[in-house]
Image (cartoon, rainbow, N blue to C red; front, side, top):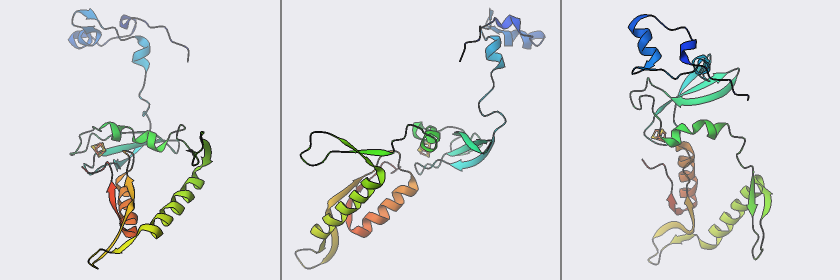
Length: 192
Ligand code: SF4
């Protein structure tokens, strides 16, 4: 985008009196805000918003999801929230990128056993592969009882480490699925 030349704030009309003076100065120095800056408008101007809750952790910070022309254009903290007062931590502040992100990888890199290079594979292929490997491990290692004959229904050869971008609902589903498989080694980053 071509840069617009900056002009001194004295070029723009100012309110009269003390208010005008204060707005036009930083101390006794003329305010350096350019005419271009004065003309800038927030990206959420004229957008509607729906109130939502940050999906990441149990603090439950409130968000405003801004929509314009049928598209989500931004997600920001909701200043009406008695919990978060308009603030979001770095995770919550990145929620928009979780939803709208052209850089999101849609393929996985796979290195076959004993191979010296990575190969691109589709995401669906990776999901199938994980399911196959999980079933094979469970079939081989599932422990129905311990040495004393007590029923334990446990699988220790599979574990899950959750990343920071898993939300509350995803972690809930992971917990339900994996506990039903007998997996006991589970952790995630939504423990607040
Ligand atoms: S992840 Fe951050 S912004 Fe989201 S609810 Fe938790 S503390 Fe609030």
